[in-house]
Amino acid sequence: MSDARATPGDRGRGPARERAASPVAGTSVSLRTVSEGDLQRLYEIHENVANRGPYFPHRFVSEPVFRRRFQETGFWGEKYGRLLILDRDGEIVGHVEFFETVAYLDELELSYQIYSDAHRGKGYASEAVTLLTRYLFQNLKYNRVRLIIHPDNEASKRVATKCGYRHEGTLRGAWFHEDETTTSMSSAPYEKCSSRTGMPPRVSRERPRHLR
Image (cartoon, rainbow, N blue to C red; front, side, top):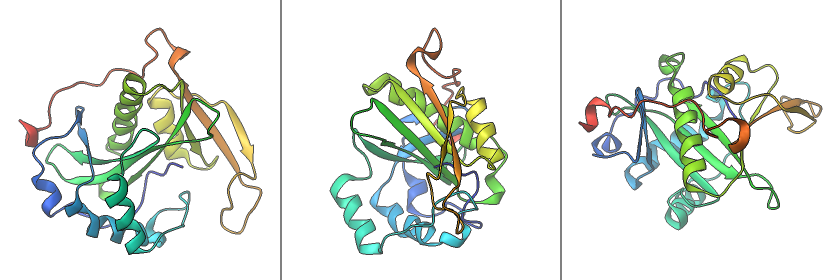
């Protein structure tokens, strides 16, 4: 599931800003794994379902479950992973994650959130999706990466198109949304064989200022 807006007012301050390195770096953002020092603020964002926007699921888990999952996996593995999105100053502005869709498909799905209205419209989500898509194709054995987007979510449609994803079909009744059981969802996959390189448009590897 993809949404370009979430919790207003999140400023990305605190211990997480002190991390010295990010494993995936682009022009405007870098991506890094979650550290234990991030957990309190991330859970506050997680449980604030009223601020996730109209197109993001409102399910949540208790804080003990949230922390236990981190202790078990670090929110990172071959079938599921979450990376924080940092701007050029090292401020956490959102996250992007991947997960396996169906066990018998060589396919992953991406989901992302930008935590504050102040950080929307700056291309952060598009670059994060591009970076993670490339990382997955280069390092994991999957043929497809997809986004599932509500038909009315124009912002996420623009992100998908900008990142090289294309509309493939519509899944009707795929998600219970605002008392509706017949909501349609658009599937926008990116396949390894969809271009000569099999990759989204290249993103500059210039390191953000806080990593130089």
